[in-house]
Image: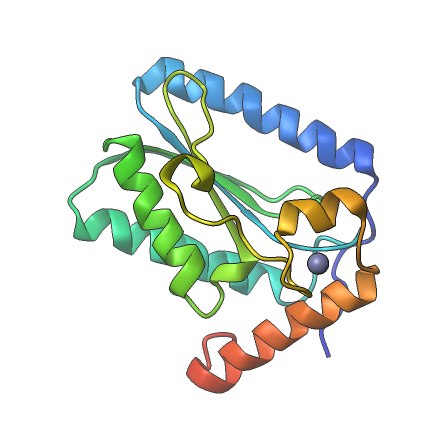
Length: 181
Ligand SMILES: [Zn+2]
């Protein structure tokens, strides 16, 4: 079983982390004039650091590095942080935001760990590109067939059901590729 590595966080801490990322992003966009990729993990419940967290985040960063490198996209800045609210990275990439978004969607939707990654791209106008704008269906909930945002908003599932779904994703990834060992 996975162990807790850091204690629970309050909603206010999550909101503060989001605000801090926003401020950092504004500075990055001003410095580089490029879209910024924001990577965080999908981690239900108040505990955001488990014994799997660092590894799942590391695989996501490695996949991003490879995807950008393969396409010859220059990374101008790569900032990562590890607050109690969970690991996060923000990356200024020299490519068109929609091209980046397509790459991120493919990683989220096809990698064995992709469902545990939240990969956004923010344009130089500060706009977050989303699936709906290119007619791609929203992400499905971890537990049921409804879209994830709806279930989060309505608090549709208890944390233990969501964490069990996360465990299943991790177990499958481990059994298939040994990526977590
Ligand atoms: Zn659901």
